[in-house]
Every structure is written in C-alpha cells, then in structure tokens.
Image 1: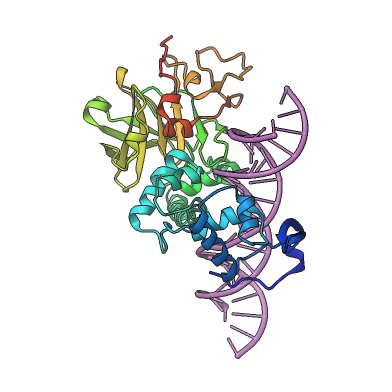
Image 2: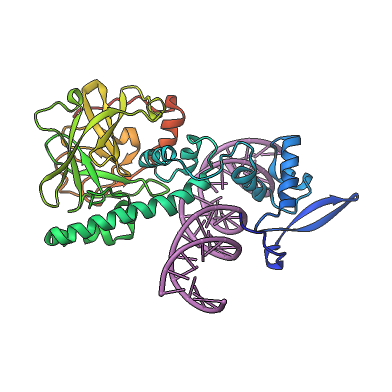
Length: 354
DNA sequence: AAAGACTGCAACCGCAACCTT
DNA sequence: GAAGGTTGCGGTTGCAGTCTT
C-alpha cells in the first residue's frame, strides 16, 4: 500500500456537512489516499453498524470523505473477507475463462472469485494478463513474419485498428487474427461481438485475418466432441482439440434451457467455448479467445430474438437471408448479466428455421 | 549513485440504473 | 412523471515503488 499523500488543498474541493458539537459545519472532503486513521474509523464503524447509506456512513463515522469514497475503500480494501496476495494459477485460469465469456464485466467476474474485487481483477487483467498475452502474440507475429510474410500483408486491419487491439492481445499463440467462427463446413458470414468493449455492442465483420473452427471432418461434433481449428491465413488447419464439458463452474450459471456451453481445450492449453443448441444438435455460437460469435447462415435462426440483434442493414445485396452481412450491422446488448444471474429472465430460445 | 523509464495498483471520474420523494 | 439522491460499474489517472541505464 502506498503511503497516504500529505494534506493537499487541491484534494479538498468537495464539501460535506458534519455535526460537530451540535453545530452543523461545512467541511471539505478529503480525496486521495486513505490514512490508517481513516481506515480505522471506517472499519470500526462498519463492524459496529454494518452497511447502510454510504453518505450517512461517511458522516457518522466522522470521515471527511464522500460516501462514494467510503464505499470504494470498504469494498476494495477494508472488507474482512478480502483475499490478499497474488492470484493463484487457478484464479488466473478462471479469470481467463470468465473474461472470454463475460468480457470486461469485472464485477460479474469478481462475483465468481470469492475474496477478490472487480478493481483487483481489472488491474490484474490490464497489467499482468494483457501483457502476457501481448507477448505471446508478439512472439507469434514474429514467427509469422518470418514464415509467412505475404499472408500477413493482409492483416493490417486487425492488428492496427485500435478496435481490434484487445483481440490481437488476447489471441493465443496460434491466433493471428481477431475473430473466430465456428460452424459446419460451409463458411458463411458471421458476426463477432467484441467482448472487450464495455457495452459489448460493437460488431466486427469477418476480415482476412479471421480464423475458423470447424467440426472435425466426418465427425458429428457433438457426438464425437472433436473440433478442428483452422487459420485461413495460410489455408491450413493448425490446431484441433477435444471438447470437454465445461467444468469451471459456469455450466450451472448458464443452464439455459436447450443451451449448453462446452469448453474446447485446444492443444495449446487454451480453453475456448461453444454454445450448443442441444435440441437440434447444432452450435449457435462460440466464445473463443474473447470473441463471442453467433453463427447465422442461410438456414439459421432468428438469433436477434435471443441477443437483441437489430437488423440495421440497408444492404440491398443482402439476398441470402443473412441479416448481418457486411458492416451495416448493429448489435444490441447481449445480456450476459441476465443470462448468468437469472436464467428465468432469459426468454426460451425458440429458434425458427426459415 | 542518480536519473529516467516502467509497473502495479489505489483511487477518482463520469455515467447509468435504481430508489425515494 | 419529474427531480434529486444513492449505488454500482468500468475506464482512466496519478503516483510510489522498482527497474534499467
């Protein structure tokens, strides 16, 4: 913990009213680092009185802080049930898993990591994990530059665009692209949610850097649990893995009727996910390396009813029943919170085959 | 040893949702 | 329904500590 900053007049630009010796006195609110004395005051008050209205707590505890600051201090530092110290490998893995599904929904992720705060996880992600994955990606790009310069000439979109930064950072060792898409053998336009976006509402068309996951040839993907991961940069399949039941605790959270989330562990040890519609033995989407993808080809479903996709296209060339081709698509909020927090809030997934 | 660069993380800010009046 | 207050969240910032040169 850093030392508390010295009293700084610039940090006192807010004010609060306190009752001192029967007089209501306007006091400046402190900002910046908390002193041990302030911590003690807040801790004692919370242990004695429990949680309540935070602005009342700030006043009654005799703190020259706003309620918001007290709340933050309590949640992120003083709470007795907080776990201290570095993240364990298990926790790190779980964060990776959860982030691949939830994106930057730090509070949702924190809710599944007892003793950890959203702020802590966010910091951990932004410093440690992001950096690590970036290094992996750089190494991979170096390899690709050495081995396949020509194909990478097509990759500038996904690697230079700020919108794709997270995608490239989060790509595994073999993932030179930002988006991954899984379906049967026909490659059709699909959409990709950038789950790193706070709103999870951005949408990316497939680009030349897109990778694909195919069911392994001649196998029913669900019966045989085998998938093949391909990279269209060089046209060859580079990876495959066995599907396994997702065991990190989310299967219960995502027990949507008719839907199942399965993990796919590829041979780099990276866990990816697919969403399956069990009733028709059909995958409807994937969540791989931070990109949730809904498949929507000519025989597919009205997925917008599930995830709030708004058909915003004015593309008159769109003549293959695909609602989301090109860049004219707009995606509504995919309600992962609701999905995870309250299954009953999710409408039954009644896809219509057109 | 000193200075600058880098890193990790605590805390702030703005916004949106929710609640109360 | 409007207004004001509160809470919760995610993005961002600032700075102390550490590392590198």
